[in-house]
Length: 67
Image 1 (cartoon, one colour):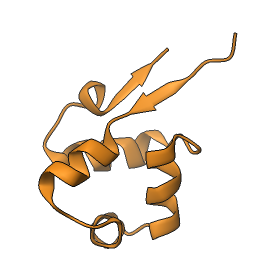
Image 2 (spheres, one colour):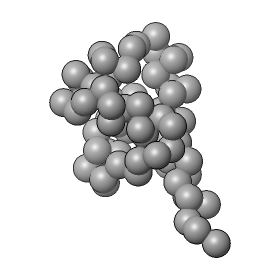
Image 3 (cartoon, rainbow, N blue to C red):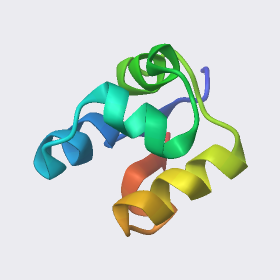
Image 4 (cartoon, one colour):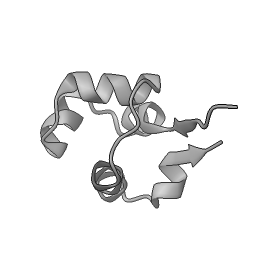
């Protein structure tokens, strides 16, 4: 069985009413990276996961779940 990491980046971004581009600019990443994370095609580094948690003022565990 392959390990999976699910995330709630899309849900948080939508709830905050920000675009993928705005999130990308705030985190100094590309919009394509945001898209890949939201689709589950890319698991971010620990550093980027921590930046997302800080940005959304949530614990990392509320954004990313390991299965």
